[in-house]
Image (tube, rainbow, N blue to C red; front, side, top):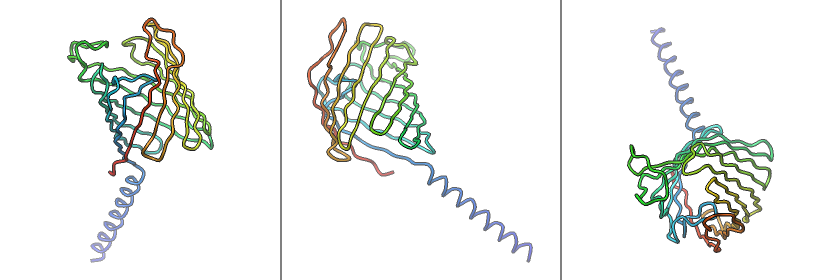
Amino acid sequence: MKKLTKAIALAGVMTAGMTAATSTFAEEVEVSASATVASMYLWRGLDLGNGAAAVSGDLSVSMSGAYAGVWTSSGDSAAGNEYDLYIGYGGEVEDFSYDLSVWTYSYPTSPDDADTPEDESQGNTFSLTDAILSLGYMGASFSYYYPLSSNPSDYSYMTLGYGYDKYSATVGMTSSDDDTDYTHLDLSYAYNDSLAFTLSKVVDQETDDAVDDDVKVVVSYSLPISM
């Protein structure tokens, strides 16, 4: 009987320990999701949807600074629907923040006449991959995108930004070996946690084929999705 009592007590301790460990693990792992509707697909100062609205969604898992997820969007008139896979790690030390991630941009419904590389073994599907380093100090930020894939061309892209309260400004600079070099400026205002407004304009360019330098106005509305 004593042995049985001890066994029951030990089983209770083990069960409690497993429950506590499971609870701690669940508390450490965070799953988040969101959905966004925007008046256009603004990407690096360019309207990829030719004025059409874009719907996007994000699902991510994070734990102790590491994270991974998927982001998907409609609205790219040239390459079709898009989904991005990403993985990264970030953190903060007092007022300094850092983040390193790898993103793969995939377009499974790319049309035959899209100005993009095609992989015959996968139909019209193609993808690009970037390694992204982001640094921040108080309100200032810097990001550099390093291409891990060289199609459609070798390129570089970097941003400098500053945010204060509900306002932010970002300067993005892109260049590639097909002589598509330009700089854009984005000014944003976050009305609340969901509604935001952005003005974007290409302010300088040195390209063989001129990019659209009209002022673009983007209204976006985002909502978190309870998991």
